[in-house]
Length: 355
Image (cartoon, rainbow, N blue to C red; front, side, top):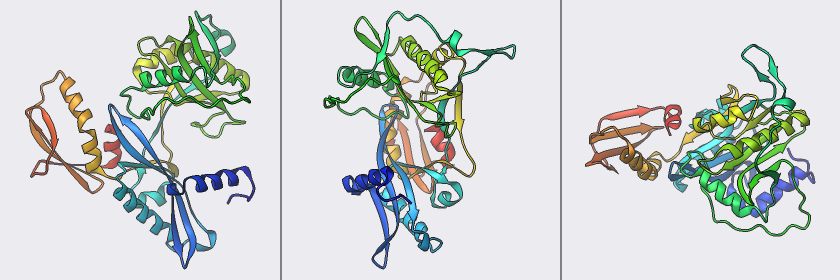
């Protein structure tokens, strides 16, 4: 469906050439009739790191649709992901089609910042008057060369052991870009020459969905123990979004009660949101349940060690998405060991929510 020579066509063609390993195809009589894209991501579950396959761009040529090719490609892809050791898979698409292959609904979590704050008396707070504040430091545009180490440090500190965050790779300085220009939507907060927080926002011509609004915040971080600089940047961007014509701003910020006072005090009000849709939406599938549990054991052991409640030794047989894992707690140590254990079966939605 891409027009040949268009920017999207050239972008996708470049992706195929650079990373053919990210694509799965189905052939019929020597012709490619179906294809999809798989990107590999790692995400943290506390201190453990699991591997997620993000599936997208699932397509079949129009003249071959309705003949089972898409079904065959999806079935083979699930088997392949299991062989490759992926723990989870995520996709966004039509529920009725993809749930046949094991994917289930899972909400998208984000923070909404309406730019007309509702008061207890039913009135509205104006952004221009309320969001202007004096800060002890300086808000300025992020510089990719001068600020990359601060960005690396803040991201690591802010997301340390934070479930859902991407693990941090090595710090590497970006190449010099002579065409670089300051971006007013990518900003840092600095005091006495030290960057204490950053916030990256982006704009679009119009709202696309509640999750993808005219102004969105995909990334932000602040040094632990001193969250106010994140509030300074948030107020600054929300006021800029108001002047840009946005009515609300969606942010991929943690749904973390520790941060809720910052979200509240430096905005016009916020809504922690778990968003699900009926026809088409975000979906997850547990691909390798035994491998996932094995990867999580160090994190589970840490949590057991930290709990103030005495935990008795015991055994447990877990079953999720047709796969099983046997856990035993012996003398306070958690191990994965087969046996005739008490059985608990969970559906994927409940398991992924607990995860």
